[in-house]
Length: 254
Ligand code: COA
Image (tube, rainbow, N blue to C red; front, side):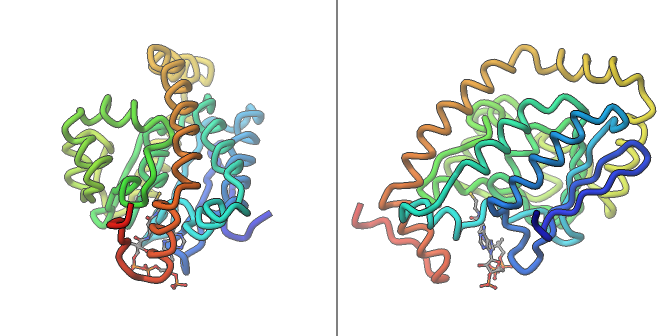
C-alpha cells in the first residue's frame, strides 16, 4: 500500500516501522491506513502476541504530514485516515511497545499514550505543538497527558508546545527507559510479553484501562470535532503555509 511503512512478524511479535526518512517520517494518509491495517491484522492473528512500533534510527516521526493538513485547510483533503488510525489504536487489545529515537512530534508523542511500554534513545525529543499550529490536542491526549504527567507539565507540552528530552520524559513518567538501543529494549520487552499467557495479558491490559476507556473515547470524539474545525480555520492555514514556506507563522491579524 505504501513503501513508507514496513510490517514484519517474527517470534510472535509484529514490528511496524515508520520509514519516510526524507520527510522525518511525517505520517501521510496512506501511512495511517497501512499502520491501521497492520494493527488490525495483529488483533486478528492469535499467533501475534505483541506489537512493536518504531521509526528509523534517528527519527520516530515528525507527526502528521503538514502538506496533508494544508490540503484539508484548503478544502481538498481528508482526515479519515488519521481518525480511523486513532480509533484502531484506542481499541487495540494486545501489548503495544514503542521504540523512539529522535523527534516524536504531535501524534508521534500522543500515540505513545496508548502504548504500554516506551523505550527511548538519548536523542529522543517529545513535542506536541498543536497550539503552535493553531490546532488542539488529539488522540485523547487532552485527558491522557495531564493524567500521566500532571496538569502543570501537560500545560508546558500542550499550551507552550515545549520540547522535552528523553531524560525529562523519563522523569515525567512518559517513557519507561532511556537506552542507546531502544528497539532492542522494545523487542526484549515484547519477547517477554510474547511468552506470557495471552488471555491474561489481554485481560490485564483491559483492566488497567477500564477506568479511563470510555472517557478516552469521549475525549477523542470531542477533540476530533474541535480539531476538525481548527484544521479548517484561517489560523491553521497560516500555520501550515508558514511551515512549508520555512517562515515563522504570523497570527497578528487574527
Ligand atoms: N509534514 C510534512 N513534511 C515534514 C514534516 C511534517 N510534519 N516534518 C518535516 N517535514 C519535511 C520538511 O518539510 C523537509 O522537507 P524538504 O526537505 O522537502 O523541505 C524535511 O521533512 C526535513 O525537515 P526539516 O525541517 O528540513 O528538518 P529539521 O531537522 O530542520 O527539522 C523537524 C525537523 C521535525 C524539527 C521539523 O521538520 C519540524 O518541526 N517539523 C514539523 C513538526 C510538526 O509540527 N508536526 C505536526 C505536529 S501536529
